[in-house]
Length: 203
Image 1: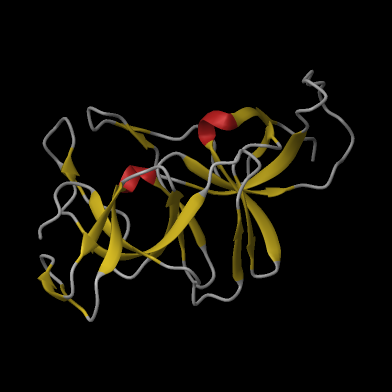
Image 2 (image 1 turned 60 degrees about the vertical axis):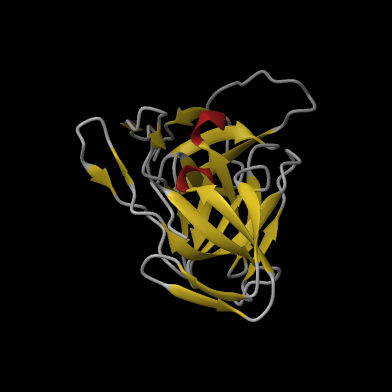
């Protein structure tokens, strides 16, 4: 079996070996799946015919939307997956997904957002620098941006760069994104499009 473009073969993992990681579904009720990267495609070409390599690597632990990709069952046996051979002792379920549908890569001490995802840490409330009018049932967070993905890849394979950057202070709805407890700290991973504003604070 050969994967094409930016497609990735994942094995669903029920429990990650990284005991410091606890992933909690966001209040947006969009479930997630945590998987191990088994094989990856060669990447895709942009409008200038330049190959865009995939960001993920074999054995990476990633998190993605449950609605993304499609499920396949591989029967017991040996499979040649391009540059890797996999032997299955029993029938097993896998997921084939596009890299752009992956939310984050999780390593021992780092959360790496992909696509246009943003990893933020909620800030303690300080004096108000602006007034945002929202419905009472939609509270907002003020958060510090820790890391951002490379940008959004359009259907025409054009990479749109991120607007926010590390150390920015941003406003976003409480219900946006996914809460992640990692190394005894709580982070939130959100889509850049769900950020309301970048705010400047007095030093």
